[in-house]
Image (cartoon, rainbow, N blue to C red; front, side, top):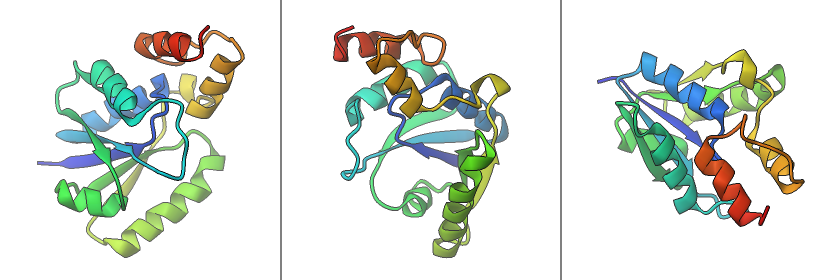
Length: 159
């Protein structure tokens, strides 16, 4: 069984994330979408909300599981019996950070490889941070995130 981990904060999940999940699923028998719990960050959406969004939007994709993750990514990967970490690269600006993380993960656990996938061209500019800013300023985000997220923005930001 070829299993991969696709980690992130997913605050919120975007259509670019979904594109990477679908691409990864074509390459692996199972993809575990690992939603990071980071006490250092202040996400707009709670961990449970982020997990629920992902469960809703990936429910129809066979072989995709959603799980919370705390601690080191490579430790999580080993516990899940995954041999690969999938990371999305939108632009060259993402590469340096992701490359450093991949090398450090390899140093910590040599049996876990990192794969970089580029999203569809329509999503290369898309990030959760930008989507949140657009939503906070009252902009329309329906092209960038799944409908459940659009509705949650309306409620949370009282739009």
